[in-house]
Length: 275
Ligand code: COA
Ligand code: NAP
Image (cartoon, rainbow, N blue to C red; front, side, top):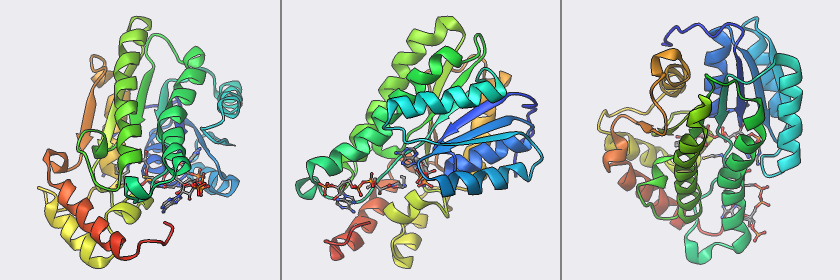
């Protein structure tokens, strides 16, 4: 169930927007009439997302770009702005993750997650800044509960997403006077997504345990995150900036932590396999 807020002719750019939670966000804006740009690494993911989004009859631009590559991100944004004009809504949600204890993690394993999640977010926002509509643009970074609830096997993602959170707050200070708002959304366990499968539900037993840990006793849906994104990007949220908003059924209060640790226990049983 999606809320209805008109985004007709607004330009919405979603990095990491070709699958999962971020695709759900792109899809929601397309349904509300927005001109949507999606970007991610794999051309096949970009092509599939563009085809699916065009089914809503709107204008869609897809670009393949790795957020670790500053120039490629700049080129992707230039392409989208050439087609659809200044950016009204920017979503930065590209991420990579795997379960691994810090003592077993290679330097490159730690670095790859920080490069995608944190440095990638810097690249996206830095390259988009000149093209954001001012006043009025809304920037949403997708963070995760690991940024503020320490979790085993998540040293890389916890550090990277904590960096994303503070980066969001600093830019809310720096860009506020230009009329640009920045916020972050921290999704709980969102059913059917890659991050959920990898981190919380490697087995049916882990999945059921994880569900019971959520105070509301259910996993989240793509619509749960998309609805918050629509609201945050809308004039109804015109005075909200610098906020980190969990959308997690209350899970971040503490109870997602044991669920992740249970998944980690399964993972420990399969040490050596690459996720
Ligand atoms: N356990 C331990 N180390 C791992 C690992 C795992 N399961 N998976 C990858 N690594 C390490 C690799 O060994 C490598 O380090 P090394 O060079 O020292 O051997 C490093 O991480 C980079 O791996 P690589 O496969 O070259 O990176 P990539 O850029 O192709 O992929 C990932 C990035 C690893 C984050 C990959 O999981 C990915 O693309 N994820 C995107 C989807 C995703 O994770 N979605 C969920 C979002 S929450
Ligand atoms: P997902 O489907 O794997 O989404 C990740 C997206 O990022 C994909 O479109 C992927 O496409 C893209 N991507 C990955 N690396 C990239 C790179 N280097 N450059 C450009 N794009 C890249 O995972 P998800 O679970 O929906 O997660 C989406 C976001 O929600 C992430 O920020 C994650 O941390 C956050 N989150 C998820 C959950 C959950 O329950 N799923 C919970 C909390 C937070 P390509 O492979 O084509 O690049």
